[in-house]
Amino acid sequence: MAESEDRVFTTELIWDTGTDGTAIPRELPLRATPLQVGPEGGWLPVHLMAAAAAGSFMSSLLRLAAEAGLCVLGFVSNSRLRIPGDPSERPTLALEPCIVVASEQEVERMRELCEQAVQDSDMCRMLEDRVDLEPDIQVLAGRRGRQTVTIALPAASSQTGSAPEISLRDYYRRPAVRDRIVEYCGGHGGRDVTCVFLGGIIPDDPSATA
Image (cartoon, rainbow, N blue to C red; front, side):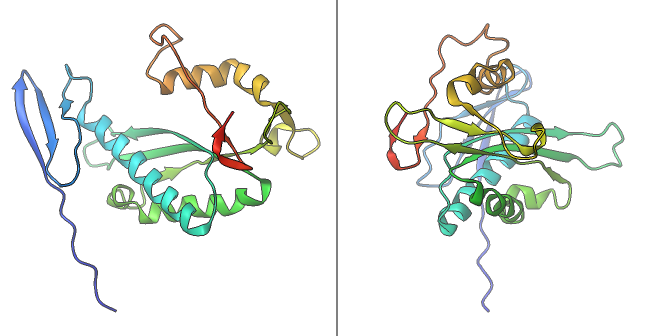
């Protein structure tokens, strides 16, 4: 079996002022906006590494899901890069993706794809065995029209052992869910966010949203 060719990715970093710089990718046809790196720019190198690992994982997972015929209805991820105080210890990364699928039958398969995505992700592979993956896979069930759309919550929260269902409206009214949305949009406690738009794919008609 022939070995795959090496891939090389090049960036240019231009010093701006203080300890900040501007990073520009050099691969074509990529047309990315220059990124400010440094304390004043808001993106520290460690933030970029955490974001790069999460983005690499997401790209790998979506590709694997498409190949497996699984429809990903929603994806949001939180990543935490831990830099030990002891220089002899190596950094670790915690990935906490929340993934929405259409049915209970797809949950276990999606969990398997998450594990595979870590193995396929370029950035996760750089961290070797220091990636802690904690996927939260939710089930969204619904149909077109004004009928109730429900979300099946994890079975661990149910006294009966089965996944309870609540309306989509009630789910997004939960304070913890709303706080996470605000955090994902870059706000803190709602103070920095002026508007949030939420869209959900209707499983029976992926071209429509609710």
